[in-house]
Length: 250
Ligand SMILES: Nc1ncnc2c1ncn2[C@@H]1O[C@H](COP(=O)(O)OP(=O)(O)O)[C@@H](O)[C@H]1O
Ligand SMILES: [Mg+2]
Image (cartoon, rainbow, N blue to C red; front, side, top):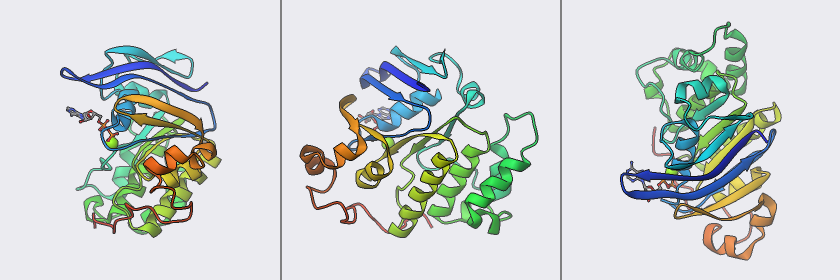
């Protein structure tokens, strides 16, 4: 197993955000965490990447207990992340943002740069543009491209489709699939449960800080309770998601 989250409890002050979450991610998988707003998805990813501390529990990555390892060392160890809300440097160019993603590398990054531009031709066209002036979809591509610059073993993605127009949502999901095909394990957090379940191998359903269900993603897609709660009341699989809002971050 590449990443194992064992019974983690996380607090914000006195408020328990995670009340014993356990998640396993095998090498080569796409695993998704779905759940309503406030369920604890972002907190789970932040805890894995080291932005939040644990009250109890353990995180094992690549055979090592990283529960107390500082976040920047986790990046070097192979945990890449594209955080919720992108987290890019708006005043810097696309190109420099990508280079920032490789800050921890000691060898040349030209191969990774070429691959990022190949995966995202849009970024290549805009390499000298200030990142903050790009559309929401382009900024999301940049956040993912930057995370890939560190050659992660696992890529943590928090709501990559958030705020994007339906066409861009499709694009982002197919790029995630391609990244996985190239050998990167993916832990994906999504409110767009329909799309996430179609893409992922396995999934966990989170509710108020707990895992209430875990199964093969295809089983959850066909699970009536999951359909009712997260897939628009069992509308059928090809119905567009209700939250397919127009792109708002242009
Ligand atoms: N910075 C914070 N301070 C206090 N409570 C927070 C903070 N961030 C998140 N929470 C709380 O933790 C819980 C989980 O939030 P979060 O992980 O962001 O959920 P999700 O990503 O599933 O929407 C929620 O109850 C939320 O209100
Ligand atoms: Mg969140």
